[in-house]
Amino acid sequence: MEGNNFTDEELSSDMEFDLDPCFINTKYECLRPTPLKPKYNQCLVELLEVIEHARELNGEERNALSYRHAIAALKAYPRNIESYAEARKIIGIGPKIGNHIKEFLTTGTIPEAEEINASEKYQTLDIFSRVYGVGYKTARKWYQKGYKSIRECMKDPYLTHVQRLGLELFDDFQKKMSRQDIQEILDILNKVIKTMYPDCMITPVGGYRRGKEFSGDLDVVVSHPQETVANNLLKDIVEILINKGHLKHKLFYGQPSAKNKKDVPSELISSHKNIMDNLDKCFCAFIQPSTRICRQVDLIIAPYSQYPTTVLGWTGSKQFERSIRNFAKKEKKMTFASHGLFLNVVPRRRVCVTSEKDVFDILGIPWVEPEMRNC
DNA sequence: CGGCATACG
DNA sequence: CGTA
DNA sequence: GCCG
Image (cartoon, rainbow, N blue to C red; front, side, top):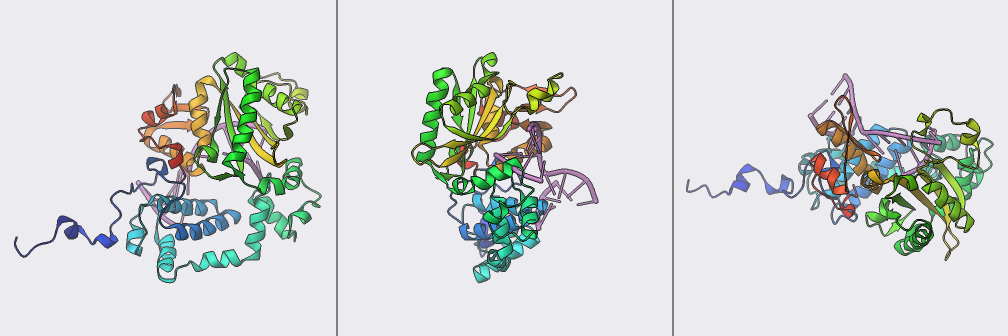
């Protein structure tokens, strides 16, 4: 007894190699808060993000996902990682990523990430993949054709309509929006929409709602208490925005599973003038008045009953959404999607929710503020 | 060794 | 294949 | 690439 002056903590293990006790060590990112600007491990995270992105551009999506899990954990970790052993205790950090971290701790960098950064191929693929309508496959195809710049890509004879638009709007879409830029557009949307539909609810989501200082696009969820009114909502909103000269292009104009509606004349579906109702999404190029810059604005219509799940589903981050869906399925035998929460027993049943918090409660996930969903 | 989010055009 |  |  005497002669043994170790505290319990020291007995169990060296502080140095223990995880910070405040850290929620889980593979489900949605179970813990992740700040937008972590105070720790910033440099390490940046380097791992380089490798993650390179894996994506290479078509190794599963591999990239592993890096994403590790990165998300490091962003939520409340102090700097100081040893390989400490890193390896984090769920999501295995031998390979662990070794990268070991390299980082001894040399201050990760050689593979440095090589990627220096590679002309990845710089080019990175630029191509930023074009709206271009994913990693098309980016690689263009690179193999020998294109080196956006200008050369525009001469490609096989461009889709959307890719041509994406290339033309490339310079504008690359410009980030400040929160003030976004507020300017929100003010217009609010004025225009509420003039027509005073009871409309308009919620900015995406990175803006998560607190980002600068955003590449603006996502807005619109709903109306009367379901019948909501039917023509998107059509009316898009129409008036075009008439007022705000919308320059429609990048994507679609509806949810309205294919279920049989006997819809095909000329109405393929017609460039959309007369159909029940549309639920329009991604458009919106001209910001003060700068004349084309901004990507995504309008999403939600039936009133699905408003909470739609807002939750479109707030992100992407990894937060994947995580919450994965958790619902694996741990609760439920399915979460923007259009609702479902219990996967036979017959499959919709679980009604009245707020975003409802979804967290039903899933048994502690509430996470939008600003803390940045995994 | 299977699974990795889900739904849309 | 691409979008979120 | 990592987890269960």
